[in-house]
Structure formats: C-alpha cells, structure tokens
Image (cartoon, rainbow, N blue to C red; front, side, top):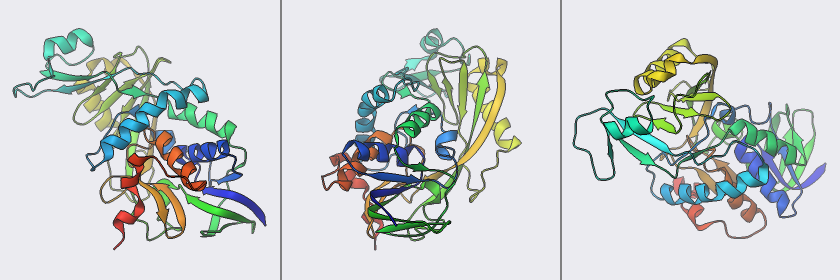
Length: 332
C-alpha cells in the first residue's frame, strides 16, 4: 500500500490547484483522475473572473479569490490572465441607475455591440484567464498525478483503484465536481448542471468581456472568442447540441453583431457542480475534506479553495471568507 499525506480524488482545476498548494506546504500528495486531467468542467469553462450567484457571503469569497488571482497566475506563467474589464449591456427603456452608462457611451467604448443598447455597466475589475492553459501548468507542477485511473472505493483514510492498488492517506480530498455524488459521496448535496460553450476565431468583436442577460462574449488576445453558457438540467449528459449552439450564437449576435463574422471552431459541453444554494462546499464532511459545488465559479474560486484545502491539510485555519461554505451547513 502506498502512503501519502493527502490523496485528492479529481483532477480538474480545483483538485490540481489544491494539490499544488499542499505540495508547497511540504505534503506528499497524489491526485487521481478517471480521465484526462482538466477535461471536465474546466475544459469547457470560459475563464471569466467575476462573481456570479447571490449566495450570502459569496461576494466576499469571490473578491478575495479575485485578489489572489494575479499572484496565482504569475506563479504559473503565461495562462492568459488579464484584467480586461466587463461591459454589462441592457436593452430596455427603464431609467438608468447611478453608475450606468448610456447607450452612446457604451458604443463609443465597444463599437461592435448592438446599436439598440440602451445602457451598460462598466466593471473595470473583472478579469479573465484561459482555464486550459492554467490546467496545463498545474499538471506540470503536481508531482504525482494519475490519470485514466478509476476509483472503486474510498474511506477518509484510503482510496482503492480499479487495478487493486490501495493508496493510504492521512486525509482524502474529494474534488470531483459534478461527479462528487455520482458514486463516491452519494449523500453530498451536489447535482450536475449542464453548460455548453462555443469557441470562435477571427477579428476580436470587443476589447472587454461583454455580458448581457443571457450570454457572455469573451475575446482573447490569441484571436479566440468564447461564448457561454447554457444552463441545462440534463443529468449527466455532456453531449453538445445543435440547439444550444444556435441559441448561444443567436444571443451573442444580438448583443454583439460583430460575432456573426467569426468562424465557429468548437462546441463543448460539460457539467457544473451545483448545490442547493449555489455556493461551494469547502471543508470537512464525514471525515473527508471536500472541495466541490463551485457551480459557475470554479475558475474564479480556484486560488482561495486551494489555499483553504492546503491550510486544512496541515491543521491551520482556512481563509475566513471560506468558513461560510463548509458542507456542514446542509447537515440536518
């Protein structure tokens, strides 16, 4: 039996980042992933670094993680991190609230947006990163990463693999995303939420992230534009559909007509890990450490989740902002 300080089950951005940070604290860590590392929700993610749900306490958690991202990205190298800002569009005739720009000002900032935009909110602090490049760098830094390795049994002290190998651990970390409750942790309050994104090529349609009620448009310096994302209740189905592709293109062109000139090069769908309150699960649960339930914010929350898990693994207090998201909040 091989022995580790921690075995992390799940090799997406959350599991890999947690393992990397734990290694930095001197721990011997193994990451086990049933497929290719980073090919689940991380692979489909657009990498928008902006808060999403209105879960109590979430804004504090998200802002703290956003503050950690520049240093996190610097350590990894060129992962496409840029504080490009967002422009949130509206099309109704309601009176603009304080802080909102009128349509003409929005079009002066971003000429590619629709001519009937009536207002916009400029969020200069919003940023983006390329999740696929982040995962590439994390994979290179995790000392013991075992891919295409299925887990058949776990306890808080061990992980058993399909080939009969047993990995003993001081702590087992569950970071399986939407698959957390599929087989291993059935009582964990996590459910899959399907999301589809598109990748296009051509002249960038904007300089900032453009967000409207139903879609976001993420232009990248490498000539790629990402459109996202659908929200579908489809169980564990991860098949991209023509209907979702057409919907995203239609919504994106409605907000940013310049998108119509781009070439569609990829359509990908994956599963986000949802929870009853849309907040993540970070902390102790039935003897395990858990890092899942990040829903649409796994990329944004990776740095603070990794810090929290690494602290817990060595017996330190996690960041205060993470305390509201302990899994115990759902225990009856």
